[in-house]
Image: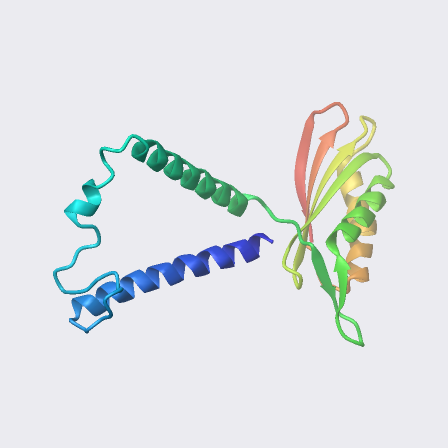
Length: 194
């Protein structure tokens, strides 16, 4: 969805800038333009002195300007934060003899989490599938029991759950980042599984 919003917003912004720039260029080059065109001649300006001062004395003008700018600033901030957030992969394309099969990313995440929690010493696993449909990446946060050896849990995870997931989606490699935390809340380490 975010990709669609980005494309629409960038497309609208591009069209608006293209129209404004094109009209200014045509007027600046002296091309005869229709009367409704924003610019009508070489010496025309975007906002005349009368246009700039027209609403200045109205009581509603400044609150409306400030509110509109605040809304624009909040929308820009939301958009920036949405870009920085890591997105989950919604659908994974699995090659098949009859053509590619689409697999829901959440389904693979759920299966990987269940298999990771079945590894000895693992108390809880949270899995996120990121990347592209043709090159997915996996992020796993493991919570291990106090009696567990984190290195062994990660090795078992790589040899069982990640290997099975890689084979089931028919990929040569499935890059996996594993973060380990102790059950008491102590941070463990981070490892990468290829």
